[in-house]
Image 1 (cartoon, helix red, strand yellow):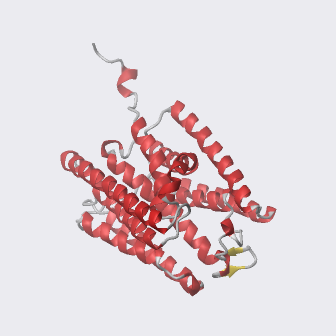
Image 2 (tube, one colour):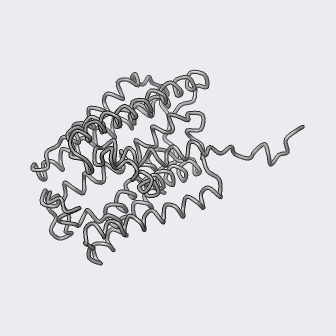
Image 3 (cartoon, rainbow, N blue to C red):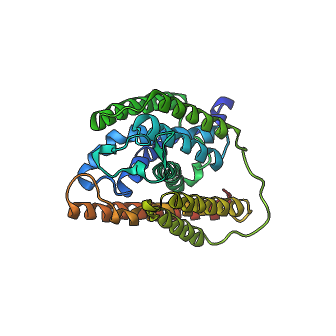
Length: 333
């Protein structure tokens, strides 16, 4: 029986890919990072609406509009400002989660009531890791649909509602834990910055022209992302503005590397996955230096091993699928 025209052009949806990203994002953001221990694994369900909802909304918008990674990263930064400035409000809290860590004392900006080091850290961990790494890993698992939307109108509507509920729930939970609320000026400026970043994201080019040239092995780009990620995470906070300068320099090196190499015709989906893989492994290794919430040191380290193993499994599976797809289809990223 022949398909009608409407049926032939109807896009194929991938609910499995969407659900995978929905849970991979909070896994990367909190567990692979080493902030939450194995004991708190059930909290993944509570974190997914905000982390997974945010990553999936960004990814779906970008793919529906035919845009690329510059838009993803700009929206990822907007997400970082939203989460840390309006929801958790850690950018302004002098004693976040009652840790007595005094994050805002490093490179302080008194006029804004923020710390330069902590703000720089939060912008990076959410933009590059919570959003970027998560999307890269999951698109690697589904290479045939890596540049296509995964949800239809109904899925989008449900996702919008879930994300909104996740933001509300996490805002209420954060206030209960911290008993802190930023000033109206701080919240207003944060909201304006979030909107500005979204506008900038919408203004990013839909695509960059390709140039003839070979790209290095995905192994090399993955190792570069791993090294730069580890260096970023190991920058000592007491360096103050020096730490901020080093972080900014590492960001510049990474972005310049990706900009130059990704424009070459030899750049493939496997290279994009390698960047996410390097970032994920950097997170997993650095987690062994973290003090996790929930359980003692032994449980924390057991969790670190398990979470890193899960990340490596995702990377290996994604690499195999992406390599096979790229070799058979010749699709470039």
